[in-house]
Structures are given as structure tokens and as C-alpha cells.
Image (cartoon, rainbow, N blue to C red; front, side, top):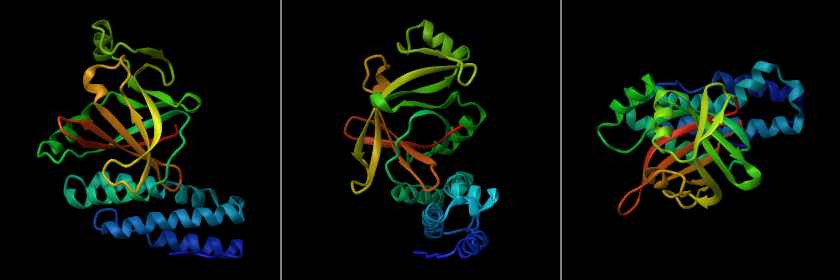
Length: 248
């Protein structure tokens, strides 16, 4: 749907009407969810032309957080409606564009997605304890690393030499940076028509299992970054999870 607005008042009315049409978080069809996020992106383009000063803080925040809410609603549907939740995430990923992250981003695990029956159990386990905090990017060198909580587990593995790369950090407090990666533009492993930012972990400082990982990321309307993690098997790369990144 392409929207046109010649006056700020008309755009504000369109945004208010848009908010009233938000799909139900737990029953909406994947197509409804994706169309709604796409429309949020079209409205944001109009705001760029008209000027965000004509919007209230609530209207501006609502538009920018539409994609993030859609992803989190999909996460909430995993337990009772796993098929549609996964379908929403796949279609939202196809909607994204190549991001250009720089600096620290807060991370959240959205869904395990191996296709195995054990996925729900591991999702329950990660809700109890997940030491991964996010990612740090250095755009100038096309590189970055992962931020983990610096706890008993991470200190023990550091003493054992796993991982070999370890940077003490106090941003945020009580964290450590591990598992470095290099970034590059690429095509999606699963759907070659989608352009992504690829993160490769082949650095010798990483333990062997981590070197088999490839992350892919896209940016959704409003700036939320949706990512997929793949693990290299004997014959092919297999998607194992979806994750999200946002600025702290």
C-alpha cells in the first residue's frame, strides 16, 4: 500500500488510523503482520519528508517500534502457535534491508529455529539464563565481537583458554567481549534474492564450534535489526536461531 500526504495534518490522521489497525498479537495471519510493518516503513518515509516535529513523541515512537513489536509478538506466539510465529519471522526477514551497525547493540534471542523437537525446551532454558548480551561493531574495520555477561562460566572458560579472544569491558558493567567476527555484504543463505550483512567467525582466536557459525542481519523499518544464526554442518549451513539487536 502506498500512502500520500501533502499536509502534516493529513499524515497525523493517517498515523492515528494506522495505530487503530494494529493486527492482533496472537491471532493475526503472517501476511497481515508483514503488511502492517511495511506500511509503518512507508509512513516513516513520509515523516522524513514532512518533518517529525509534527508528531507527538508517542506517535513517533509507535512508528519506529512497530517492527520490534511485531518480532516480539512472534516470539510470544512460539509456545502456542509455533508455525505462524516462525513464518512471521521468515517473512519479516525478507522485508529487511542491509544495516550499517556501528558501536554497541543490545541483543535478544527471539527464537530457536533448528526444526528439531527440542527447540521449545531450549527456548525455555534460555529464558532462565542467557549470558549473551549483544554485539559490538566497528564499521571502519568491518569487524566486531559479542558481549557476554562476565560470570563464573566466562571466567572459567577464559582460564582454560576458551575462548582465546577476550576483552574485558565495563560497557555495560560486568561484561566481557568474546567471539570476534568480520562483516561483509552478501546474499541470504536461504533466499538468495535478499541482501544481508554477513558476520563470519573464522578468526583463529575463536573455538572450532564458533568458527562454524555464520550470522546474517537485516534492518527493519524503524531501525530494529533482525538476525539469523546458521551453523555449518557436514554438508550445509543450518539455521539455528533468530535474534534481535537494538541500540541501548
